[in-house]
Length: 79
Picture 1 (tube, one colour):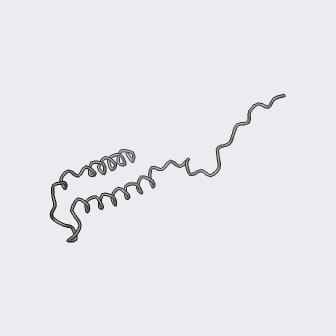
Picture 2: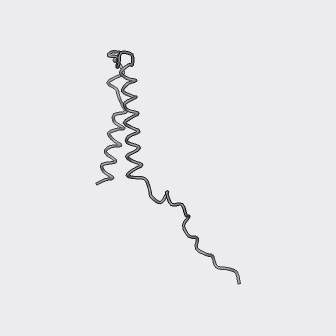
Picture 3: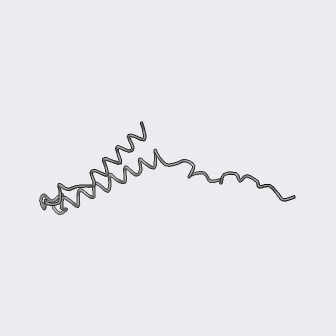
């Protein structure tokens, strides 16, 4: 269930990246100086960084954090 939820979050953020509705709008300015498309992408960048933090927290493979290498099996010594 966790993998499905993470996949749906990724798909939603990916779908939000395709902002076709802001391309033709020159008004309104956000905070009086920021074009709406630029403000949207600033918000999207914040959302994407939050998603990446969630992914690192929940889906990061634990074996990458091991400090000691796995034990090496000894080879057959020559007689």
